[in-house]
Length: 138
Image 1 (spheres, helix red, strand yellow):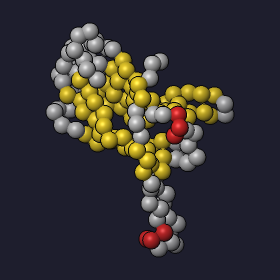
Image 2: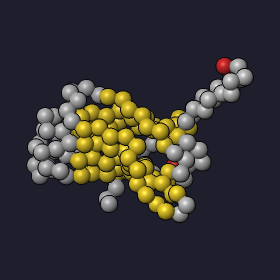
Image 3: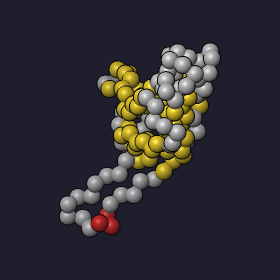
Image 4: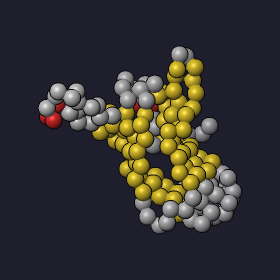
């Protein structure tokens, strides 16, 4: 996200994962890389829209704020099976020094623990699906 004028202060953006990935049939794990560099850095969040008994609501699964230096970070978030949409949501900081980026996004079936009596070879190996982010206007 570019934070040069006029994209500050407190300008928001949203990127949704494509609808083709939802609804989920089981719990998943979202993994991604992110970069938040600048003395006036804002906030980056991952939000999940969930359907609980027919009521839709947004929940924060992950968030980070502030200057993390000029290096890429790696994050992950547990995604419940009730999720109907995932969104990256960012807010620029107080000046042009608040650029942020995301990359290498994957959504994987969450690993399941093997029963205590199972041999190690019985542990599930997650499958990876790469996704393409689409800009969303909300």
